[in-house]
Amino acid sequence: MSAWTSDELETIGSAEELELASLRPDRTQRRPVTVWVVRLGDDLYVRSVYGRGSNWFRGVQDRHEGHVGAGDVEKDVRFVELDDDDLIDLIGEAYRTKYADQPAAYVDPLLTPEARPATLRLEPRS
Image 1: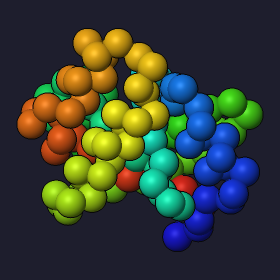
Image 2: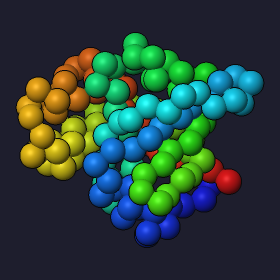
Image 3: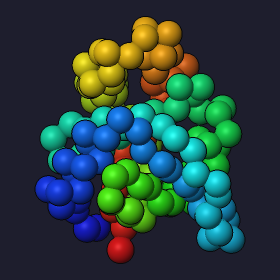
């Protein structure tokens, strides 16, 4: 597994939005969606506001691979599902902190019991 460079972490982690496109089973890329992204240490995370039933999250389930872009960074990634409730809580707090200037109507849905299990770590892939 390759790691994020410090420039990639800074660019993506500080970006307001991330373009995310998952791969279909035949390895073709789906249409990108815009999501919010947070950084904790040397890891980047995304979460589906509509939970595991959202279209883009269901698409990720096909291959757990895709592509992300923010600023001048474009990267092929692996989507890793999380099962650590403490980490998921920390990610929720990272969303609350990073997007504190956004209306609660946009941030609060990311913190619901429905959204929590739809949290993914982004890992660069070669």
